[in-house]
Image: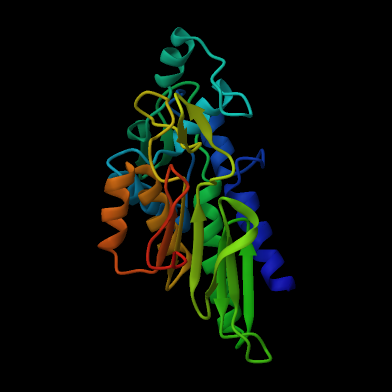
Length: 271
């Protein structure tokens, strides 16, 4: 447990946007100044992972959209004017993020990046590797919507995760076995935005700052947490039909909740 806590603390201090001295915070503070923050091999690898998500999602997965969150109320309704939104969109765009031999830099003044949702699955896999190196045979590691496991429970029972049915929040959609696997959920069907009798998730488009008309929730089981997170993230940021087709090509167990709160996918409960 001490080993796990030490690793989590290290990654939090290094990458969390809530830590004032993290790499993320320093990049945000120096955005638009031309000054680069020196980065090590681990950080370059994480940024390479983010770039791969950005490219695979056709530039819709974008850590700089965090700057737009302040334009919306907690219920998802926009309180900003059209001019304010237009001005804030100038600060959005992972294409403005630069990495050179000297370090990392965000070229646009006032731009912000938030890597927390990417660091969590990386932390899960990192802790799992540390425990495996210590010959641990039974472990369940969870932070928020990300899970990584080793073996089964000590008594031989399966490690299980569950998702609730949208229409009946106290019932489980399904219980999933995640022995020696990674698991990730992206999106939350319980926190949506309603516009013109349509439901939208809270993910915002870096193009126009509007909610994306995609799947409300996507859950994926994979060999590691990073892979599960990648699949869930990209699928949620596509339109519904495109996201479903993309998931079907992955050959991974998945479950999705669409904008009518229907459950879809190989892991969805039988009707």
